Amino acid sequence: MHFRFLTAGESHGKGLLIIVEGVPAGLPISEEYIGKHLRRRQQGYGRGKRQQIETDFAEIVSGVRHGLTMGSPIGLRIENKDWNNANWQVRMAVDPVEAEVERLTAMRPGHADLAGAVKYGLDDVRPILERSSARETAARVSVGAIARRLLEEFGVGINSHVLSVGEVRANPPEPLDWDRIEASPVRCADPEAEARMIARIDEIQEALDTINGVFEVRASKVPIGLGSHIQWDRKLDGLLAQAVMSIQAVKGVEIGGGFTTASLPGSQVHDVLTPRSEWGDRPWEHASNRAGGLEGGITNGEEVVVRGALKPLSTMPRRLPTADLITGDVTLAFYERSDVCVVPAAGVIGEAMVAMVLADAVLDKFGGDNLRETKRNFEAYMQTIGPRGDQPSLYG
Image (tube, rainbow, N blue to C red; front, side, top):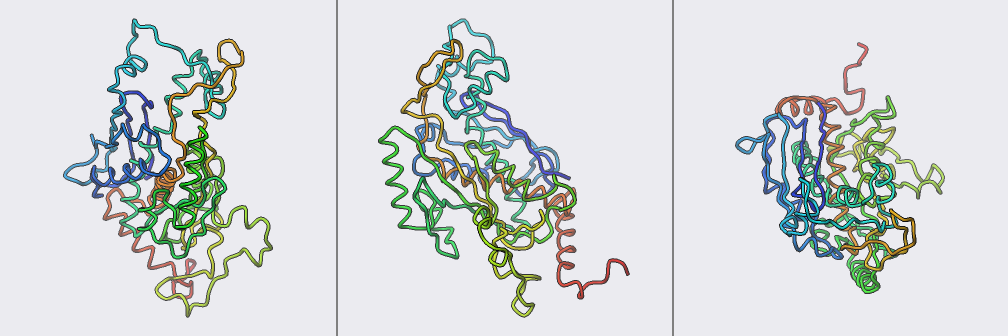
């Protein structure tokens, strides 16, 4: 069994559609639970006016009965309230329209406009920007909420926080206070850095510019043994990197110590296993977690740590020079509206993507068509993960 999903819909179309497949029967899920995480995605200092229009709500249209999943595909629908604007009902109408609709041809540097228009043979970038828009991440957060709900049944928790906005870097205290982070306008654990981040976002907004930074996702109590070293496409760190890199504007992914470890000798990087007397109620424990909870593409029982680096948003109030799609002549880039900074929201989206990858890995490892069966498999496995001398030999 595999956890997978498809999304459909455009930024200013009627709405977003989602199909989620592979969720075992018997998982409690509700629209309110999904809505809680959709609201988190819409928050964060530096968001634009679109968040004042939309109040995202994912309607469950299939796959759930009496509050429990049925094992069949789950269908979700998120309405785009901006569609109620008559202009969008013409610009994004499904049927042909008599009214003349202005073509968008002043392509935005850094966006998918040029590459998409050329790929699909278009003379208008509207179809490209509508689908490549980060509005699609509302669908991903909905799916991620279902994945998160599944992982909760196995004790796994997922959180995120902001490490930097532009050149302003946080020095977060450990352990992280997740309640404090959720209450922060920029979802930052460092109060001093939080104030400087807000001030920097204000400066950028006044300059009609955009800025982003780095978010970090942490998954706690992930069982040892998810993923595989057997083939390249089964390595969990590779799957996590692909998932986080797929988020709009993310241009870099780091797991654990990441690039920092490249400048250090091995003696300062590798996570030493501690003596058995120090494990407490854990089957194994490391003295550090520079590997970010993954070794050889397999979870090692430590916290999974993934970071995403976002470039500044390419839709800018201060329009950059560009070329016209039709004539090739120099012009100014198209501008409709934009956020100034989305790192706090991107962390929530990162949580969703990490949750989906881990949920799929859990189902791949433990199987089961219903939740009880999957949990039985999980609990039986967890009895076998201690020191090998405590277990019967595989070879008899």
